[in-house]
Length: 81
Image (cartoon, rainbow, N blue to C red):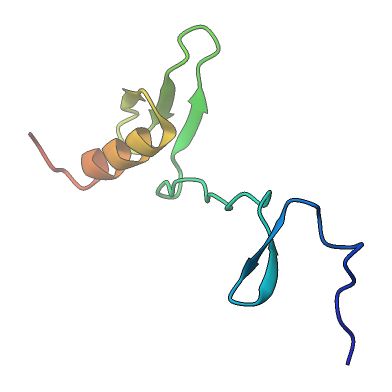
């Protein structure tokens, strides 16, 4: 049976349930989901996130990419406030 040597484990490693786990590992965050055909980008000048819907060509702005994805899905579903 092959084991991980102490030299491979970072000095910042911690034990979790008897198994070494590197504390420096950051969780992977998935990008927000946008419906097909939606173009989205971050404005260099404004710092806001922008999207253009495929049908009707509606321009949508939000402060974060997550908020933009939510707003795009809401608009495309025809939800009104």
